[in-house]
Image (tube, rainbow, N blue to C red; front, top):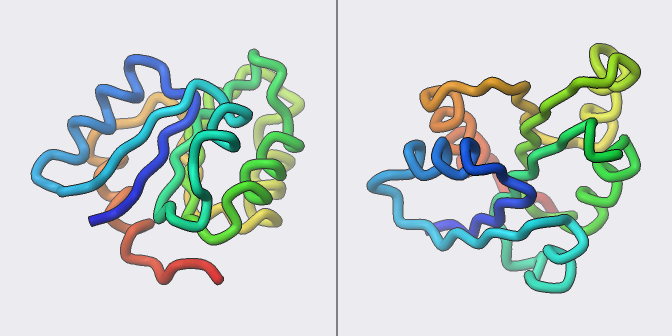
Length: 128
């Protein structure tokens, strides 16, 4: 059983994750923003954090840095709805690699891809 935190999920992502998790016994929490997640959750107890990154919401690489800083031991999956050309492509992928974010999925995401990514992330050793 894993402790999973989902941040900034729109209804489609929530539905997708529910479809990807049937039969798996996990404790799933939701948070509307990274800021509320910081105050709500005990970061050391989380196994997996799934954060939806939306470029239109004035989110930038500093938000990804804050995510890693806030949850240093959790495995991270970032789903990204990129609409700003400055954030797309190599720059965004470089930031993801530098921050050791385990997985980045660009929207739209298929249920099978989400299921595989969650299973793969949970199979990784917990970060120290």
